[in-house]
Amino acid sequence: MQFLKYAVIATALAAPTAIFAQDAEDAIEGRQGYMSLISIEMGKLSGMAKGEIDYDEAAAAAAAANLEALTNYNVAPLFAVPGTSSEDTSESATLPAAFENPEGFSAKLADLKNAAAGSQAAVTGGQASIGPVLQQLGGTCKACHDDYRKPR
Image 1 (cartoon, one colour):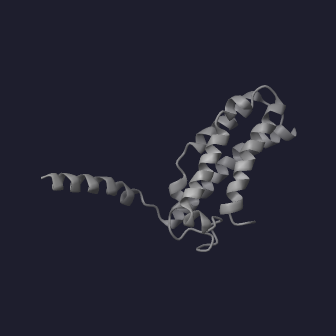
Image 2 (cartoon, rainbow, N blue to C red):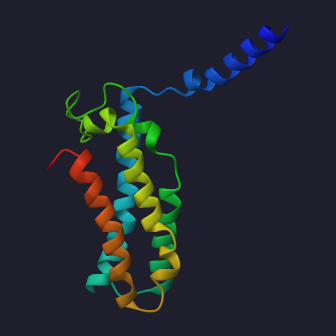
Image 3 (tube, rainbow, N blue to C red):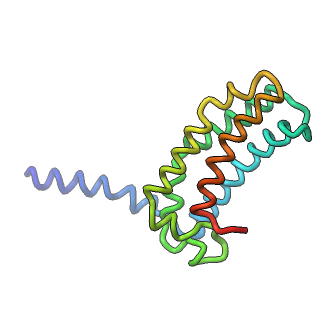
């Protein structure tokens, strides 16, 4: 009876993986959408930091809050779908290294999450407050792109 109980539990735990497995096209589209959202929010902050957009504390805080929320999303599974590296398809900019070193890639995602933490509060208080936040976020973006993104 115990064996049957454990077999049922193991099957139940394995089922979500099969049910939620994504095909290559969905994974690439999801990654690109995720990165586009990050880019949009970073662009708002960058525009304010450079003076291209008037500093608006509420808008800066909203962009930073969105970045914090995005970095809390578990995006790693989108980068684990076989057949979706830049060597597999021209639609992908993800280097094979992301698949070959999932622990390193996950560490880069954790670095981004840590860099974004507290950024909503940090961008308030004037235009000058945005630069340090962007440097921290941009540094983590660059570090990941250097190792795991195909150069443009």
